[in-house]
Amino acid sequence: MKERYIRNNQPHIQPVGGAFSVTLLAHDAVPVAKVKEIRRQRDESLSKLVVGDSADERIECHQRYFEALEQLLDDRANQCHLFRDERVADIIMEYIRKLDRQYFYLEALCVMSNHIHVLMDLSVQVPSDWDGMSELPAYVPLSDVVGRIKGGISYQFHKLVGDKRPLWGKGYYDRCIRSKEHFHSEQNYIVNNPVKAGLVSNWKDYPYTYLPPQGY
Image (cartoon, rainbow, N blue to C red; front, side, top):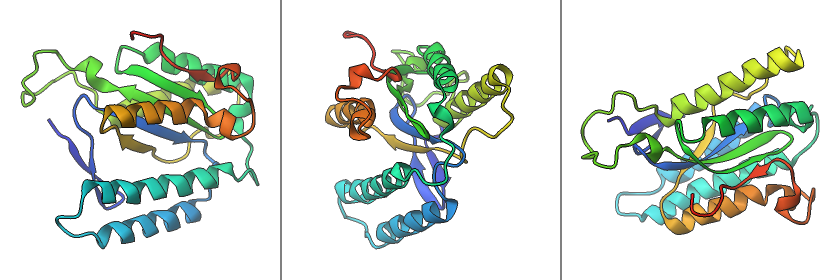
C-alpha cells in the first residue's frame, strides 16, 4: 500500500488507515503569494534538519507553518467568506456527515466563514485482520477522500445555491495524528475555532461544529 507521497517537493506520509486533521480553504481565503512564502520558510527550516534530529523537531516546523496559515485565515480583508452563507454551511455539514462511516469515522468538524476543519479516521476502511502489507483494492486514500468531499460539495453548492463562483482553494492541508494526546488536542482545537474567533463563548453554541457521541 502506498503511504509516502511528494507534495510541494517535500516527503509526505499518509499511513493507510491513519487519522488526519484536514483543513480546506475557500477559494479566496488566503493570498497565494503569502502561502508560498510561509511554505518556503517551512521547507528551509526542514532542510536544515539532519539525520538524527528528533521527530518532534520536524513536527514543530510543520506546527509553525500551520500557525502562520491560521493567522492568514484570520485576516478578513478582501474575502467574500462564502461559507458564512447558511445555505453553504448546511451543505458542507450535511455532505461530510453523510460520508461518515463510509470512508472515515468523523471525529470533529467545524465550518468557518472561509475554511473548514475535519478530523477523520480512515481505519473504517481497514479490516480488523489486515496484515499491514496486503493490498486493499477498495481502499480510498486521503487525497481521494478529500477530492470526493470537495467535488460533492461543489456540485451541491452550484446546483442548490445557483452560484457559479469557484468554492475551494487549491489542494488541502493535513496533519497525520501521531498519538492519543495529539488526537484530543486536534479535536479540541477544531471545535474551539469559533470561540477563538470570538463568535461564541462555548463551542456548543456554534451551529456548524460537530463531535461524535461518546463511545463512537
